[in-house]
Length: 150
Length: 160
Image (tube, rainbow over all chains, first blue to last red; front, side, top):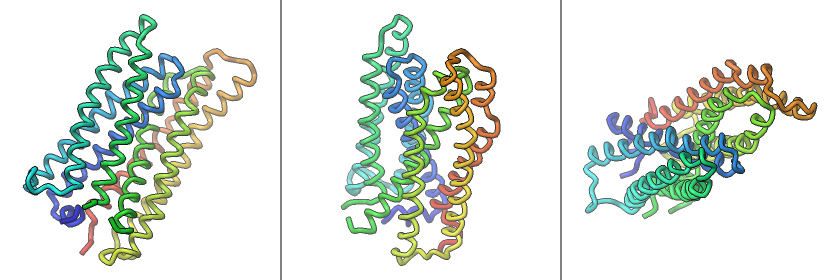
């Protein structure tokens, strides 16, 4: 069964739309976070901008993407036993990515708090590295979900 | 994976780059509203370049690979209503995006002018240009056009 055929039942269309829209917002949030932190050069405004892109854009995007994914999976009756390779790649990256996103949010949050005392840039560099890793991982996930390798 | 599967994957990845760039510009649209100095405005230029690259690669990839897929896949034809709708919406979004960029470049150009004149202080005119309401409206319309493309691609209205 292809994603295109799944999308032809309207309930699935809505779930798929939310899933893809959430994933796009997530990627946009990560791209903004990584760019802002990479070009901040110690400027507090851009360090904050990078962190809040992760918190206010990437995190809601991840939640929307994951809710959409679960909705599709429950409607299709997908589970660990009948999951195909591309589906496994998607689920593993989405969940592991969620954990990494949480870690980067915690590290970045502490970093932003410490900026007031002139510290915290190290933690925000860690957030930058994690956001780049997440961006790469989600590119692989999108490739797997769209191309469906066997 | 065969060639068409790769093409589909790259088409979708391009769409992610396109929307990712638009999301990045939304963050900048909000952030630049509080910026009234040339230095603060010019510091955004490298992030703008990332957004421009994402939108450029994404827009080009979606249209080129999308047209290829419309011809290559038996289940789709270029004259299908939903594909024509996507092509029209893509053209609208590209033009609206170009106009949005032009609206926000006025602030960037003013910042360069002030910087070159050795005026680093806060400037009311620069703040007004950075808060362009025309730019916000154009970016909202660009986003709406892209959202409609996404809806069209997923729901495929009129597809057999």
